[in-house]
Image (cartoon, rainbow, N blue to C red; front, side):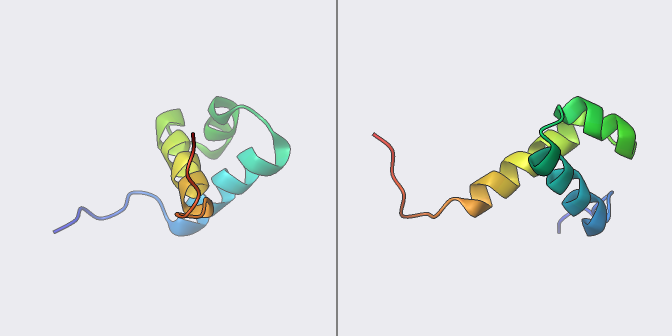
Length: 59
């Protein structure tokens, strides 16, 4: 069974949106939101991976 999430979905969405739209460093946005920078970094990476079509290949 998966562990319960520590942060609400709205906080995740807000953090990812702020990093993408403002271009501010992840560490600064995380500090403003009161979360760890590595948590936000993971959310941003996950959002980028989810936004990339699976059929796209590199190389």
